[in-house]
Length: 332
Picture 1 (cartoon, helix red, strand yellow):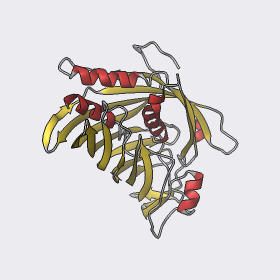
Picture 2: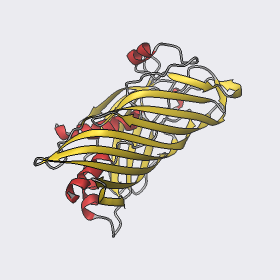
Picture 3: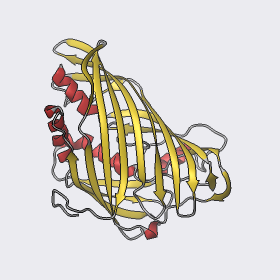
Picture 4: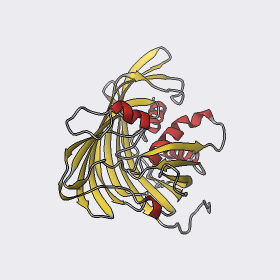
């Protein structure tokens, strides 16, 4: 069972890579001050629907990305995680700090499209598991093997002046069907890089909520995100974010669970963070934290167990103009 718990930890540790991860499916909450367009129309356009709670104090500004000013960037993501698991109320894996992981992605803007969106390409330049001497070697090795499969992965996407990302395409290095989960995670990273902006003008202190249905890996869930605009000028803004996710019971993709089958009983996650956004850059300077409680029913060899996995995550995302002394020696 200890081996199985490690599989569970690896399976769930990137359910929430960052606060505000995006997906192409959105659903709106009812409200008196909703962005123009019905929820059905927004889903057809693959755009989010906002409920504005407070427009903030004057002066009010129409927030838009400056797509024509965007230049190539590297995005560095660092994550610290702790995972634990219980079966029938007994620890099968006490809460354990996992080795920190890092990832660098190169992003290159292309000429503005006919529909006034910014196409860009991206490529994973490097991944790293920062293993300490006392880290669990099997867990670290499993994480390292999983992340290395992302090395060299590339693709393309488009972003609108309102920060809505679509047309995400990921180019495979091979035809490994087992990459499906990895590709879902990478797609969410790319879509979550920019922040969708309200249609109407807002000022400092503005608050809005986005409720949507999304898919993370094989799990379908509902996410509610609350945004608070803390600082604003014509070129940048700082927002505080808090988020909650919930998933109903559903079957899970269990091909990596050592011959067991799995069913999700419940998933609840909450977290928060801040993001500093320069409207002339795609990559924000952001930090986030989250706590996830995942309850599964596992069946193996005629036996059934209910396993609860907890995941605590801290993440930072930073833009960098260039990389120096890259260990891998890889270039975009």
